[in-house]
Image (cartoon, rainbow, N blue to C red; front, side, top):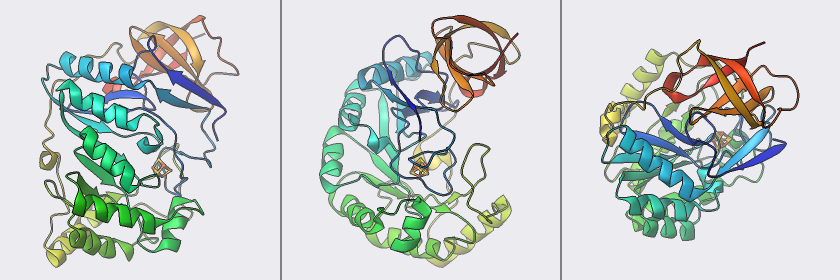
Length: 336
Ligand code: SF4
């Protein structure tokens, strides 16, 4: 469990970090990250989220008006009149208390071509779904990793997790709202293999995928700072795709999906503020997201300073060297 909490408001840039703000990966889709909190502790979580996190130091919460102003500015800076607004998180976006206001405000900008929320659904209710539909939500990408309640609890690493509630709300979304539904199980080999065909059948039966493919099966991957279920080895990509091909024939549905299925295309990337290897002076503003990190700011970007000892010297300027700049995510090492 994280020890610190940062409310992100005007003054702190919203590009540069994976855990909050806006992430641009050079397409017409912008990831919008309002919070890093999660109620679950999935055993395969790639970002070590939730109450059982062992690596996190700080959780983040961004002011929704400030976040939307950055969404509009980043889209403009990329030369886009419209961008897909994809609300995801290194946690679960439904923990965000202003999620309805966020969707409504995004919708009112006229810049959001679509608005999607990615979630494991633990906090979904019919009332919330109705409010999100009214606010202008286009789609929910819902990760259901097992229909079996006991296995679903085990995978979620959470004894109170009730997949039957998630199933019931998912069926409501598909049958009674305009919100599109994409079912996105994480396939953890050797753990939920037999659940995946059941999930495919269920997604097709309830009418998921009104305007997009109904399923987006995700391959479990090992991540450096993620949780790894004991004894599980990630599948090879060719094995994964050949099994999807078998199921495509069996169920008559396309499972090998592409960005174009969602209207996603390449678009000019936001220009980088630093080059890899460059030296820079950065103001330290807070503890970092993970242990051994500080948060810094320079050139209207946030920067993660890694390998640092102890408490951050908040308000001081330090010299760093950039280790990573890809996708405007900045990681730097303290220079002596
Ligand atoms: S996989 Fe998603 S829902 Fe599960 S712990 Fe990680 S962030 Fe939370």
